Length: 74
Image 1 (cartoon, one colour):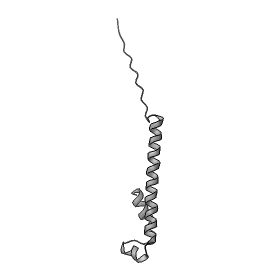
Image 2 (cartoon, helix red, strand yellow; image 1 turned 90 degrees about the horizontal axis):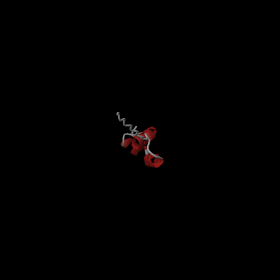
Image 3 (cartoon, one colour; image 1 turned 45 degrees about the vertical axis):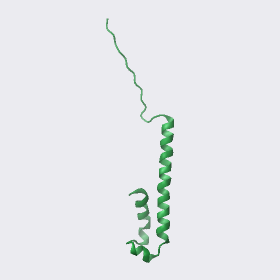
Image 4 (cartoon, helix red, strand yellow; image 1 turned 180 degrees about the horizontal axis):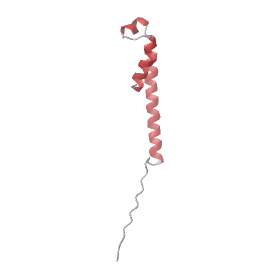
């Protein structure tokens, strides 16, 4: 008599709904935190005089780029 074993394993690639929702909430919070850093950086640098920006080695045209780097690391 021959005996056969059958194994069935089911796994989900993305987890359950609660895992996906938790990930979504985490991603949204991270995006909001990064945007907050961007906005604060732009606000603080924009408040400086051109002389103060020059002392930092920056010009007004560089504010957005510096804020992007500060918030998003790009």
